[in-house]
Every structure is written in structure tokens, then in C-alpha cells.
Amino acid sequence: MTLMETMVATDRPLLKVEGLTKGYGPRIGCAGVTFDLWPGEVLGIVGESGSGKSTLLSCLAGHLRPDLGSIHYDGRDVLAMGETERRCLGRTDWAYVHQNPRDGLRMGVSAGGNVGERLMAIGARHYGEIRGKAVAWMDRVEIAADRVDDRPSAFSGGMQQRLQIARNLVTSPRLVFMDEPTGGLDVSVQARLLDLMRGLVRDLGLSVVIVTHDLAVVRLLAHRLMVMKSGHVVEQGLTDQVLDDPQHSYTQLLVSSVLQV
Image 1 (cartoon, rainbow, N blue to C red):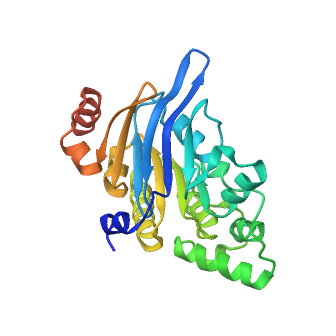
Image 2 (tube, one colour):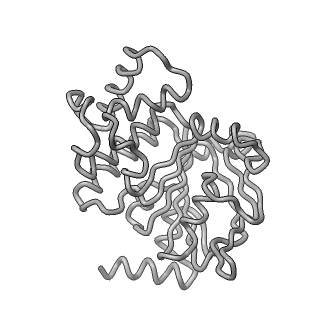
Image 3 (cartoon, one colour):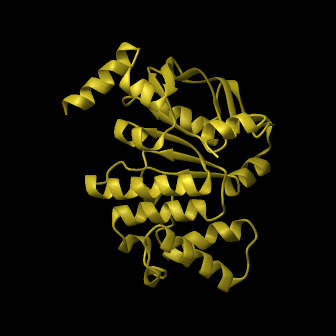
């Protein structure tokens, strides 16, 4: 089923955001952001440093509480949830991939333990089954099974990022937030990671909100694109349409700067 067919067959979006606003005193983090995210859809959010994209992602993921607006997930009012319910959602249906994998991993715990911890958080207790799933997911993200007892500190940056992805996806979340997941990696490692991510998104039918400054990343992964500047969404639409025929002067500047590199 194509994304368009999924949207037609689905009664409501998985994530519905209306008027989301967050400020820091006189400075705007994000203002009046509104969008729908459908099951199986990848939404890219781009903009320069300070554009508000990371503030928006933090509000969506529950790391910051917005000043105004609403967030509904699968019809449920996220901002009205209690702390226990939100934590449960973060362990089951949601996942968050940090730019720096060290922020999303426990560096003093083995690779297998990092993946297994998330399974234990949702009630898994059988050691053999937990270890087996951890090894299977490590293989899925191209980490050899004989590294299962190694600590993440012994891994390269690219391997740490792949391990963080395995840790997040082992519980089969429906919605994944990604903050600059290829940032800080060299070009060849980025390409390999992007290919892996594209395959996982397709195979698992994930809905993803991905923040990046790299237009090549959204070109490869995102169905739709939002461009932010000074806390506001200045343009949004289908990714290829926005990148190939940008309407806003700021989007035109972003695209032209990439073409000139």
C-alpha cells in the first residue's frame, strides 16, 4: 500500500499538531506550527541553526512543554496526559533518536544490554529471549553478533548510531523522532546509515519526524518537508516539490546554497 492509499484508508492522522508555540522570554522558539502526520509518513523539518526546528521537535517529543497549541497522538491529547501515561508512551509507541548517540545510549552497559533494557521496560523478563532479540536487532542494523557484550564506547560513531536505532526500534514503536541522526558522521558513514534508515522506515511502516540541516537527508527519507525560519514555518509541501520548485525566498536560498557547494 502506498502512502497515499494509507492516508485515504485511515480515518485520522497519527499525529495532529495545531498552533504549537514555545518561547524563551522575548525570543521565539517556534510559533503557530500546525501539521498532520499520517501513518507510514516521514516528515522532514529543515532550517538553519536557530530556526526553531529543534525546539519544535523537543515539544513534540515531550521534552519541552509548549506555551500554546495542542498535540494529539492517535486521537489522544498528549498535553493532557499524566506523567505516567506519557512515560509509558515514550517506552512503547514513541522513540527518540539523538544526534549524539551517547545521549541515547548507556555507555557503561553492553550493546546487548542497551537494546534489552528497552524490552525490559515494557515487561520482558526472559533473559534468553531478550538476548536473542537484541542480537537479532544488532544484526538488522549491521552490527556483528559477536559484539553483543561489547560496550558502546568500543564502537565507532556510526556503529553507536546504529545501536541507538536498534535500541529504539526493538519495541516496535509507531512514531520516531530523529534529531540530526547523521550529524557529525563522515560522508561514507552517513550514506550507509541513511540507506539503513530508509529500509527500516519502509519495512516497519514507521511514522517519522526528522530534524536536519542537510537537504540530502530529507530528499532521501522524507515524503513531506517543512522549512522553518525564526520560529515560523515558511514553506511546506511534498519534499520533491519544495526542493525542486521552492516558493519562499528563504527556501530558495537554502536550496541554492546546497547546489553551489
